[in-house]
Structures are given as structure tokens and as C-alpha cells.
Image 1: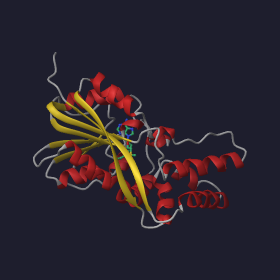
Image 2: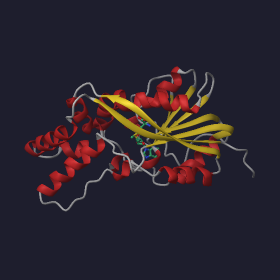
Image 3: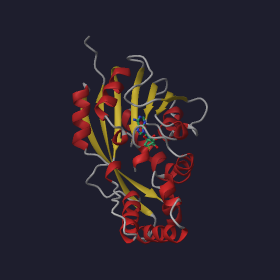
Length: 263
Ligand SMILES: C[S@@+](CC[C@H](N)C(=O)[O-])C[C@H]1O[C@@H](n2cnc3c(N)ncnc32)[C@H](O)[C@@H]1O
């Protein structure tokens, strides 16, 4: 999923499909969890780091916070509603003053940043002492559908087509102890990690399959000849078409507190 990684521009179609298929089913429900976990209160200034289309920003704004949605990709930030300030900038070079926010939230974004430690140092720089930083990630040792199904179908297609290309979903997940370590090294206090489960309900299997177009694999799939594209989508559908569309989804949130900076 290279295009969610640092430094690359996201296709407009990825942002549109992300917001259409992935945000309502996965990222918005998880956003409620993260906002509650971090204890966002009315009047807080919240930075949503790697905000994407603004799932977390919207929930924090509804909780009465004043929100800044930051992301390195301008197309991803396009759907963020007026009233939420947007900031197009990389997570490791935030255009914000020291100690200017009460809470930094980062939902499924840190694993795509090239230098996560630098990003966490920046998060702690802009956080006021005593403020909260809360980062949610998918852990490498948990099954992650539909993304694992997408990568497996694309890998089978590449193998069948005789390509030596390896398609892996590894980049979307990270180790929880890695995030905990980085947050400690960056200087956070009271660091703790919590594993959470959420029952995710896809309206139809087709909407879950279509979510592939909201990932950085989307533009690649669109460029395949139509018969191959259909084969890949059928493969994904076979993998995901189990009884009922409610699937347990797992995420881990890591929380730390800002401390007074010693110059
Ligand atoms: C899976 S999306 C998550 C978006 C959002 N947090 C959500 O919950 O829907 C990952 C996001 O990380 C952003 N991203 C990747 N590298 C980044 C960086 N170095 N700085 C800021 N954002 C970055 C991508 O543009 C993308 O919007």
C-alpha cells in the first residue's frame, strides 16, 4: 500500500473511494473509540495527525473540540468539512507552534510515516505538557481483512501472470511494542497500550470488495485488463464471502502524555 506512505501523492479516486466505502464502515466507528479513549472534551484543541478524509476530525469536532486535520496528501484532506482547519504537511514537520494543542490523535497513520519517531517527537513538541497523544495501529500479528484479502488476491494474480512482483499488506501494520518504544523515546510519560475489538458491519460483500478501490492498490487494479480485474475481484469476494457481514476487527491504541520540555 505504498501510496499511503510518506512523500507520495494520493490519487483523487483513492480518496473518493476511501470516503465512500472504508470511512463509514471502518474508520468512522473506530474514530469514536479513539476520541473516547483519549478523553477529548469540549474546548480542547485537537490535532488529527495523518487525518486522511477526516474521520477522526469529524468525531472530535462533534465532541466540541477545535480541530486541526493534518495530512501530507491534499486530495485526502479534500472532503474535510469547513469548520475544521486543514494543514497539508508531513507528520514530522508540523507547521504549528510548541505546546499549542491539548490532544494529538493519529488513527492508522503512523505506520505509513517514513520516520515515525520523528513524527512522534513533533507530536510531543506541539502538545502542551500534560496533554494526551493517542495513536491507533493495526498490529502485525492480527488478521486484517479486507486488506489481507486484497493483497492475497493481487499476489495470486501477479503469480498467475508470471510476474515476480511481491504484493504484501505488511506496510499497513506495525508492532505495538515498536510504537510504545518510540513514544517513550520521543519523551512521552504514562505510556500504555490497549487492544480493542469492534464488530464491523459491511452492508454487502460487494461494498467490502469495492473498498479495494479506496486503497492505494485501487489505481493499480484499474489499470489491469478487465478480465484480470474481474478475476481479482472474484478472488477477493470468495475470501470475504463468509456467513453474515459482521466481522470482528482489532486495533491497538497507544496513549502517552506530554511533559514539560527542558531546553
Ligand atoms: C489509512 S489512512 C488513515 C486516515 C485517517 N487517519 C483515518 O482514520 O481515516 C493513512 C493516512 O496517512 C497519511 N500519511 C502517510 N504518510 C504521512 C506523513 N508522512 N505525514 C502525514 N500524513 C501521512 C496518508 O496520506 C493517509 O491519509
